[in-house]
Length: 78
Image (cartoon, rainbow, N blue to C red; front, side, top):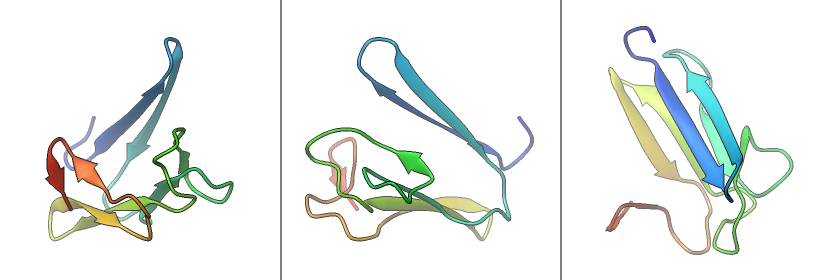
């Protein structure tokens, strides 16, 4: 991977793994259970448009963009 790139992986079930490589300067990647998102997530706690990842000031930023159950990284709510 190049400097600043981010590999996002989502595993659902035993054999279903999706991976998306993000590069700085690309549009924010929207995640959720809806059909119009960039990375579709599965689960009862996932909203149709749940969260987004964006590259800002040399850092990747994860934002909650309308979830009903919140967005968490480990034990930390964002």
